[in-house]
Length: 292
Image 1 (tube, helix red, strand yellow):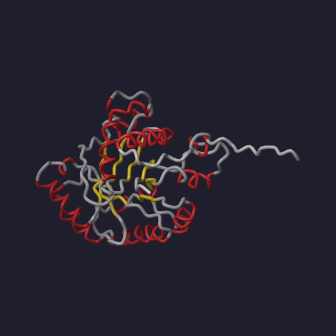
Image 2 (cartoon, rainbow, N blue to C red):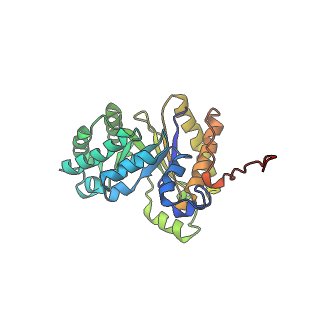
Image 3 (cartoon, rainbow, N blue to C red):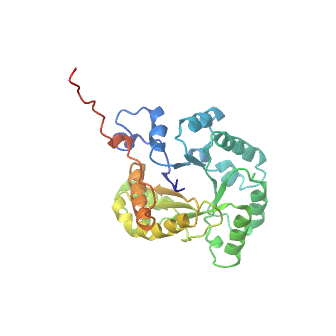
């Protein structure tokens, strides 16, 4: 199987009933139905609080084979403690990720640094990276523009991540900012999402892209056409990309992902087709026999 992991920022969205989900899907059905189509998801809820370990067992058991969760590292670690003296919090997060590992569903857990975490704190970052257990996959997202200097700071970061096989999170918000907001949700999204400098940097086996589009997903085609050959090239190299499609309104994220899949397929024709959406499959009708 081609190792493309494509997904959305959430798997639980009521608005997907009748499209990605069947119209009558109960909440317990959402993850199985989502994972029957997409192979990964961002676990953004773990940024705010870690649920009980039983919940991770439930997620691991409910996901389809080959699925991967990419948990977002707790804000208590990244934003509150800013990677300092967070041993207890990191241990709790690692324990949760290990539960997913026991179900064979862990993707790279991603560490999103605050926007003001600059290269001045590089020693703190390095100390934290050295604490990460290497039996779990990790990815790092930096937002301060000082890390994107095309020079010493950026090269240092690339070298540290490459040495530890930690993936560099790529963030592309160009589609979101390509035009004035068309609705209130896009306006809010434009007020919150960063404009991180664009990179194609690969430091591990799992190139990790988060792309933010528009609610009218067809408007994103110029950028998806640009990313298609890049991602296809990663697949040609035997890498395992993780691609996440964000729409300002989550209801459009699956359509955005499907559009991304189509563009990758143009560049990499061997890509398997996207499985049919449960909510769009016609119910099977048993053919009557002569004896009915």
